[in-house]
Amino acid sequence: MIELGKSAPGRMETERTRLKKQAKRTAILKAALEEFTENGFAKTRLATVAQKAGVAKGTLYLYFASKEELFAGVVEETLSPQEPYGEETSEDFHRPEDRLSRFLLDNVASLRDSGRTGIALVVLTEGHLFPRLVDIYTQAVLTPILDRIMTLAQTEESPRLKTIHRFPQLLMAPVLVGLLWNRIMTSSPPIDLPAIVKAQLFLALGWTDENENGPDTTVPAEPHLQ
Amino acid sequence: MIELGKSAPGRMETERTRLKKQAKRTAILKAALEEFTENGFAKTRLATVAQKAGVAKGTLYLYFASKEELFAGVVEETLSPQEPYGEETSEDFHRPEDRLSRFLLDNVASLRDSGRTGIALVVLTEGHLFPRLVDIYTQAVLTPILDRIMTLAQTEESPRLKTIHRFPQLLMAPVLVGLLWNRIMTSSPPIDLPAIVKAQLFLALGWTDENENGPDTTVPAEPHLQ
DNA sequence: AATAAAAATGACTGACGGGTCATTTTATGC
DNA sequence: GCATAAAATGACCCGTCAGTCATTTTTATT
Image 1: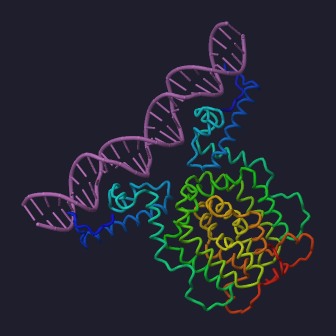
Image 2 (image 1 turned 30 degrees about the horizontal axis):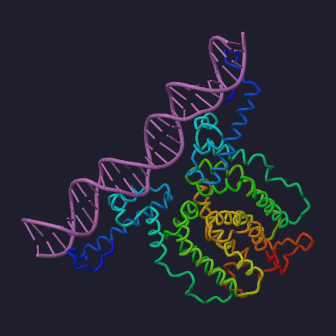
Image 3 (image 1 turned 90 degrees about the horizontal axis):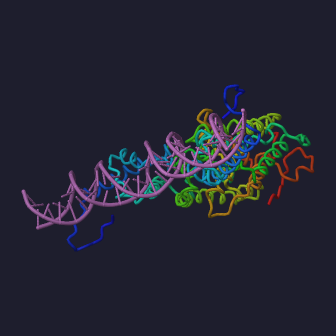
């Protein structure tokens, strides 16, 4: 799969070939992401992935050693091109409540049409059967996010922030529940993800949208957050 | 499966036979619950269930028409013998915050060694493949719990209770996340379910264990309440 | 005991799908 | 163009497992 500098009677890989292989690899990953998102890991058939990628089934195995490796490739491909979670561009907000809220809402917003929603659901719902997927996802996504939340929550003495520092999962919980709900409960109205996250931010931190105007450091007493 | 009053040359089912069949049915359900809990729906093999129940595979089909029906039977059997969620025995607490907290903590406590944890996880993680399971579970468990939360949260004017009324899922979220985390993250320390629920109750309602003494009716307004 | 209905059995079937590999197609170097 | 290596193909293999059914065992009745 990888060319080594060899003088033996091998052959040189041309630029054109390299690009073609790269394109094929990309096409496979794209098709796989779609299928995994649509059907989950177990139910996805490699024949379908191959067909969708315009490739024969055997070709998949020239690029990925197994179905699990293919999924790992999808995770890495889908997750890597984004900036690390640890950094924020805007340092406009200084209260940890605002920074936490901004961080979470940014992440939720970026979920919408990235492939990350599908990946997250697959890991959540089938991870116990495929521990390797959990490892990859944990390292690439979960740990950075939780670390970031803990760091932001560490700044203060507030008992609420202390609680979040102790259970950073509580700020992710609404997202997970929303994703699961929307996947499973097809017969009832879907949960509005940003809305439920804002609701949790209000409960947990007393945070509201309007907060960005008023430099009031305390929790607003009466938020009509309809 | 069901005997009709017939005069034709049928045979009468003796009490002994009836009990034997009942026992067999129970044994099958017990084995099925264990296997579904352990392996999930898709991965559970009916041959194993049969063996565990001390029965031949074909016998399963005398009692349940399919794997899905068997699961439905398990859900009904596991869920039905408990009291409805809508009622509480202790009306000692009058503040809705206390009643909500009591309600949630009671439910979490009762989760520990009932089969309900396993069922919940199966529905959560495989429900999208088996909508019927979701329907059964929604009707038997989810809707009653959410309704109860909404009812309890409706009593007051507090903006926090309003938020909970709007997103009752927020109070269940920590439980779901805890269950999923503990199933998936086998290499990191498990989440203490009662602890994370209490943490959420504190964030959402300002509720603490000690609160049962202090009759403070309002939500602690100040995050710096250390 | 004889008989027949009901219950139980487990070998078998058929669909499914991940993974393989002998063969074919395509690209490279001379 | 020719020779050869790399890449691609897809028919095939093989294990799995829900569900079936001809046969055997148990039970009720006379």
